[in-house]
Image 1 (cartoon, protein in one colour):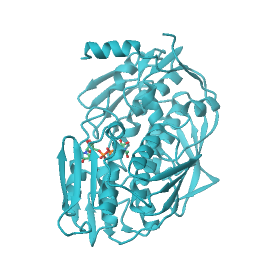
Image 2 (cartoon, protein in one colour; image 1 turned 120 degrees about the vertical axis):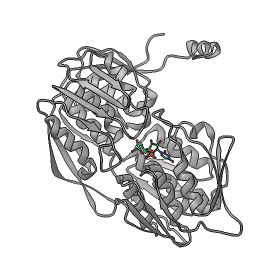
Image 3 (cartoon, protein in one colour; image 1 turned 60 degrees about the vertical axis):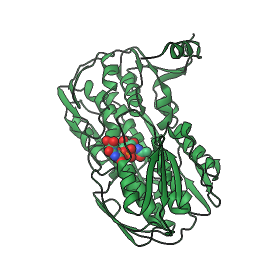
Image 4 (tube, protein in one colour; image 1 turned 45 degrees about the vertical axis):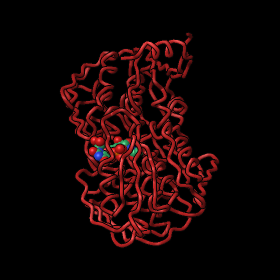
Length: 449
Ligand code: UD1
């Protein structure tokens, strides 16, 4: 419950911008997909391992990226941004504590712990924040670092990690993850890169962002094999070198646009895509009734040799289906909210099961305000497709939920007003401009107080 002082504070704060969407307009045309937020964030942290100037390209312009920039700056790193190019100079870094006010808003900020520990032998990082979609502990990260010989303790909400005794490097270890956590795999992979000896991560996460991180580290001189499978082997090296690297395209942004096309029955084309990263999303779109065609393009190259492609969405009559979120290559939890919106106006019944995070169905209550017929039972959303939804004022509850509400707004009759846009701004680069360029009618406005 809000305290009276909080209520008073809220009532005098200036009104926050909202997004007004006038739905039932078809979309048409091409949209370019930006670099992957989740990859760019971990690669930014990874540059700390290299005492030199690294260049990251295809970095999306997002609030989360700015926050990670602030964390790096607080650690002595120098950053320069020019469009989607980020120059990161980690020649000199200092053993400071990452600032709580930023870490509390960005779970990915915890990624600096491995690189700091391996470079300085010590790290202090507050327990992270981010989207309120579940408890999201860091026990697997901590246990991994401990297996490699680090002394890790949590004091007053801050994780302290240090090398023990006379050891100057972390020690290679065999680590089995109880769950294929993306973040824990990334923390251990980076920590192991400069460790002494061989580290083996079993039951590792297999997400494309893990492969991107391994490619990035290997191009800096690391010796990592098996990324993209459930067993990753890292032969520790003593030095890493600066590099110039292209961040992979954002598969979640791409998936979000595909769902926007499907829900508005629109033929749209996405450029700068790695289609394999979207395999589970494309498979579900096909089951629902759409076609997705892969086409060549003269695009960019990622991870050394992967050429980007175009994806053309050809809409069809929408039918319900069941979805269960799982670690990659299963269906991504980060696409669950958007598909919930899509299935809510697809013919027939659907069951959506969220197995990755325990509190990630809060968008359902907002979708219900628009006339959908969805019931939540435990971690399942039971959807009975309706033929029509109507615009309403709705509140974004987390990043991907905000995208789901925008998508529902595109399909709804009348005006939808999405509140809580700070979530959207964390993870979608120029979403409004991109949707407008496809013909959507939407506008960000400050409501009259
Ligand atoms: C990353 C992504 C996020 C995505 C998620 C799953 C980034 C910045 N974020 O988050 O967008 O939704 O992967 O694909 O890359 N867990 C533990 N202990 C741990 C770590 C995780 O119990 O030490 C649990 C979490 O609470 C969650 C599950 O494991 O229930 C999956 O989390 P994880 O894969 O670690 O996700 P993140 O790295 O936080």
